[in-house]
Length: 251
Ligand code: 13P
Figure 1 (cartoon, rainbow, N blue to C red):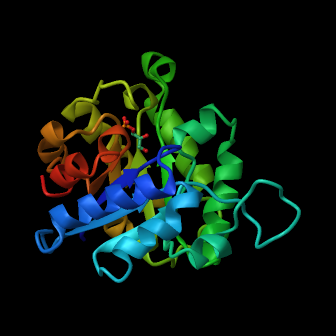
Figure 2: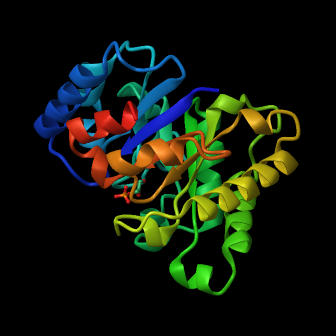
């Protein structure tokens, strides 16, 4: 199973800035990426085609949407369909990022609709999960992760190809705070995720990638990436700079 080194650019970068960052990243990593790694960039809708034009055709590269609406088309002002993402070169899309859950108020049920519709539409889906600091302090980490996985994967067929589903564990308190989860916290959560995946996908659970996200930086990535059940990283702030993200990709 190849490690997935993923960037999430959130609501940053104009088209030209995105293209420049993509070019810097490509120049730093092309020809150097280990065989067992892949790179993914989730970019704002307006920059997807620009990023695709830089990386398009690289076999180790995946382009991702950051969000989508679970319908093929229709009167959904302001939304984007999986079909439109694919048209811009996307093979993946995020669902349930903590900012969608906590800023935009998306429920786990709605996230589950996105995951199943995205998969049906031919995208691979990255389901993001993670607890808030209040939930952690209340001892509810496993309960929260369990609920988010249960509802997020509720309508995914058991025979789905394992490479089409990625789970990203991103504790909300570690996102953008500089406070990375400790190795024990990461391993504990990822082991729990793996056990839950085993219940849902008894045959292929070991082939589903589970990423860690939350204040990943060039200086801590090498350690995180070797932890048990960590199959890659999902990086926000430190992915905005091509040089910095290249160090993470090659860490
Ligand atoms: P930071 O790497 O900035 O903590 O963000 C993580 C994240 O939200 C990636 O999706």
